[in-house]
Image (cartoon, rainbow, N blue to C red):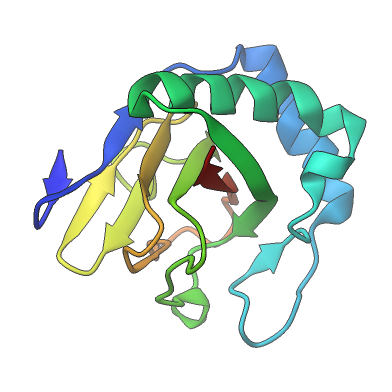
Length: 160
């Protein structure tokens, strides 16, 4: 899939159900409101420094490297938790990195399972990931079910 000539790759079925649920549980204590320039709840971007996140980050990175066909260095990792509010829309890109990845830990199929880019919504199933060039502007989707939390993990990479 390409966005105006820029490749975006979708990777399916990355973690086991147990690993995915553990990642959500392990991320909970780290989620907080970081400020105006951060949508919804997020962790700090240093999750790679915590042992409980090494295995899922390693599995996601391994699959991303296979798709990209290059060695990738994990630079930043964080978890997002949102409830679909319009106030949490924040168009942004990840300047200074080569590739960014979003792993979809918990989503509602056909509602919030994916990411908006300026010209298109790209759907990705729960337990899947999307890797794209970091300069692409994007945001999380809104949705009308505030009682349902959407959880994603984001990783910024540099090519080694």
